[in-house]
Image (cartoon, rainbow, N blue to C red; front, side):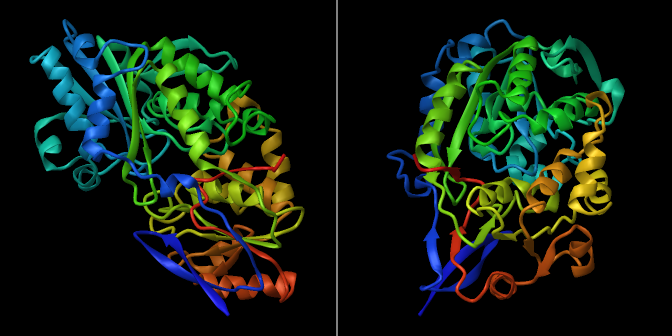
Length: 427
């Protein structure tokens, strides 16, 4: 008897069919079962009206003429069509004449297109508001604000240093080396130069035993991010939690750290699951927008790693509809065996960090112990093989390949959305 499990893939799902005798567990975050008692707009409005650790945004906006509102780019599912109009409304209640700039935090990603902005924000905001896209590779757009705790130089978008009020919005989920997303992450890496982002993501930082999913204390990447956000005086944040349909189920606003901490505790409670070891672990990057390219995919692969034992096979479903996702990543991931890649990267000093090298570093670590089968219909099989992975076009095809590696009696653990789950070893 086979069980059918829907795996998120691009804007839809792919079906995985697993014999019940093989299926050991299906791991999903309780978050996806959480039922909010208010609408998305009501949750956001309530958070804005009851900020944690700060005055309401309308009060903060009084007398502040130049306002910068940092939001996420096309690779994130921030529900800006809901959040931005409410934040803009709040700002203008405090200062109707405020000069507001919406700054898109791209990190090292490609610029967000106007078409993507219209899909993310809606036509009214694109047509009527001032929008600037962070360009990490344009040195003249950044100001050197000094040194971060790690020793990295902090180059941040000038707009953040020239405004009277700096606001950030985003969503919180487990993050495989920053601990959790949201809050301070809008500034670093969001609106920093390539040099600052690269050093924050150096081999040494990524290799730290504290740079892991769900870990904030002593996490060097997180510590630099908080320091950077405080240095540019982020005065207000709005963060949300999302379910599997990318709908808002909770929201928090207020102080950079206090509001983020309350959100993190909610996410931890509702996303934490015991890790269950399987011979084969099947997962995805949660579908669109995070599965647009291979560069983003280690997020879920790292979750699968926690359930794959010493030598389990990992099946990753990731559309890669937008290709590889980065020229540096594409080159590094194909430069040799996983051990050769890791040896090369380990010799690079923090200040000489290559853009996107964190991604092949994490893949090399996982590939050292685990075979990875990549389910994609957008990348050529030969390219997948050059990335040290095994190509497949469907989850069922990938499962047959995995059985060939682990045996027909192999146990299968399925984590349909690997990004939303915080897998922890049972006590």
